[in-house]
Length: 365
View 1 (tube, rainbow, N blue to C red):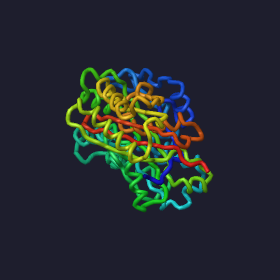
View 2 (tube, one colour):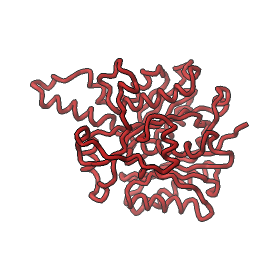
View 3 (cartoon, rainbow, N blue to C red):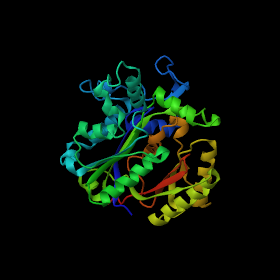
View 4 (cartoon, rainbow, N blue to C red):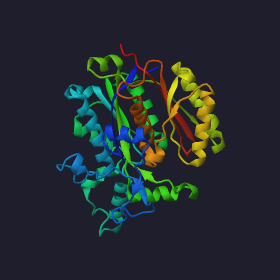
């Protein structure tokens, strides 16, 4: 089991910038998916879960952000708001803070725009060199650390819809290995016309009706004693993460049931103690298999509340699991999960992987 707890969190979502609008929106079950301005956002989708009125200049600052792409700005904003909520003491020893940030492919728009410029320009090297750093996958994580003075280990994780869970698992191992005292962990995703077209062509026809979304969620992970010493409330303890693979879609239900069962056993959590379940719910077929796998693992005695983010936010891709985790913390409230309570975050990816995380209430003494 991990000694780490989640003690602070920050969200940038289609509800707006900040944890408060996110918690209010999720709690009310209000959809944040709206009509797209087709002039500003051409592409195959008419609707999207877009962060309203978001620009790098507005939320990060005008200085040094001329070439900052959207996913980097979203990530820098989320990390900055989390650090600000914790006070200056958190970054007093910046070399002891790690950052693990999940992403899809970095900024698809930056990659495709830069490639296009190299092909249509008079010379292949007639491109804007200031925009080249936006084409690498770890741009958002690197800029978040540089912008906010974080000097510990810096890691980028990419794993499709399961990115947030993979990042959480990596962050636990990073701390367990003694590489940092505290670690910021989360994931970010942007909406762009380029990403929209890639998703459209990569989906089955019956899955094209689901609108896209964007956003980021970042969490502070530290020991319970460190959180209390700093005056922060341990909101949830990270008890276990598990992952499995499946070959055929029909096998996803069994794979997830085994995955959840293994995680609960490792965490020492009885299924009936699970208070909250936040499934990914990606696509009708996979969502049904995911629900069935969770039900198989928990059994008839469990009566959890289900938190479904995807219908409210759209397909937020790499940020999905992290936003699911944020929904759990929002539902748990300011005091977090109570001792003896547990929460489950799950995901079934279309590429043949399943994963889950079990969280438990931390001792409040």
